[in-house]
Image 1 (cartoon, one colour):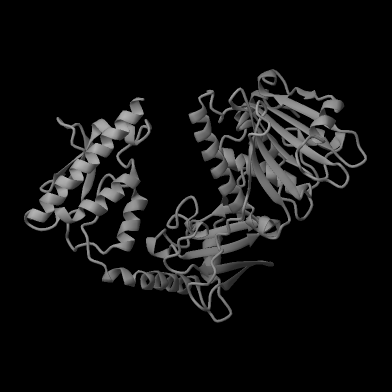
Image 2 (cartoon, rainbow, N blue to C red):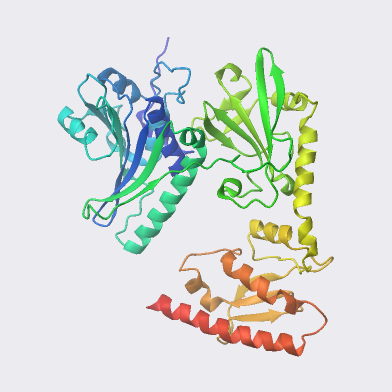
Length: 493
């Protein structure tokens, strides 16, 4: 038999499909598997910029034998029935997708603290993992993490040379990065672990620590974001469970209908309500897959109130395949026929459920019919903004949409109304100042464009501009031009 060991450079390709937040979630999985009740994610600043990141827990910790297995590429431990881990790649793939150096320090009850370190740049010519002195591991594990443990056990995972961290000491850019990163991480972790957080099995915090200013850090507690967390159902008899069988396995589709016109973070979610319709797969109370119908139905704006919980486990693994990043479930060929055969106790099928969900959506939009119709928005708006406007405001039948576009003007005016071309032109001289210097595409500055659309839409109606319309345009032009010039002056300071 020919033995073909993997090329050490394979380490450099691990976790390519991970985002920053999915990589963090993979590390939290390990903490939960270690029976941790507290998990702290800490970004550490030095000399004004993010330098390293730690994920710390108060779980059971690892013995020397266990930490060697955890740091082995593809190392497979004995998984318990309620463990979230499965592939033996999570720690390494998640870490090397974000960092060039991975350090793991751990202490199990009754054992000496242990530590190991992978450094990618030293591992290209072989699988070399460094020992970390026990004294250093002990100091780090028992440091000021604020994570109580009855037997002083726990684990610290540290990333150095993090690729996502900005290589600048510019305080504005660093603050923008930290604000965005903490918000995105908290939102993602709150969503995928919402069952664990709601049941108080675990508490997760995301922290910023400045080593040059010990009292200047921040700490944010991750709150659950339950995609089924409505206060009342959109339809009285829902949620309703549709059941299908595959051999000896039983699959339950828990079908929900959100109330119409919901506007909570649990409904909107980061992807928006339209892209969040569909199936939500859970494995051992961990959310793996967010939205999409996987062949049951095509995505439809009118089905945005429909969401379905599906709990899967390894006993039906033949029907489902989880990607290593634990961010998506791929369904097998039998899934479509199973969903078609699924029925509730009263005979309700998936087709019946989707029909009811669409009816609830339509009924919730009826009140918009009392609003005055408007010319619909056209180019220059993000699709989700256009969809929201169309949901809320009835369109004038047959009306050509209004575009909002940028171009360079000869003068200082902020906008021009082109009624014939059905376009509101904006002066490109102010674009960079209004966008904060960010490079935007056709659909940039959605907030400003939406406000302008709501203000000027009526001047595109009718055969001519009346005296009142011309007076309004003159007023808007004067005020908005002064405001835009002020933004431009501030940007140059």
